[in-house]
Length: 87
Image 1 (cartoon, one colour):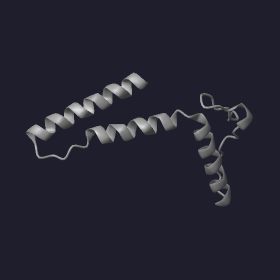
Image 2 (cartoon, helix red, strand yellow):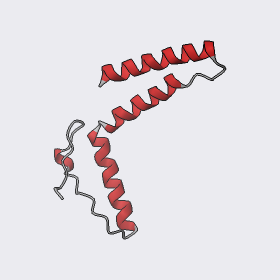
Image 3 (cartoon, helix red, strand yellow):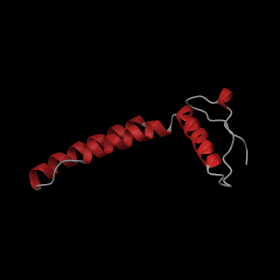
Image 4 (cartoon, helix red, strand yellow):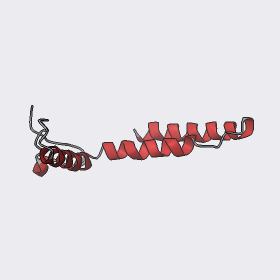
């Protein structure tokens, strides 16, 4: 994943350099792909995902929505593994 994101960022820098020379477009590709990379790493942090899942569960319960959100087993969840109830 890191290599793929590095290559995307390199591509973004290249496209920005070309666009700056050939067009009047403001360079944005590198910044866009940097944001995408940061978001990708956040999505792969399952402790972070577990925290979001717990927050959604609380919010849906407050609103009395009939949405089933699996229980998170925090004691077994790590940055690389999320453990939830089977639905």
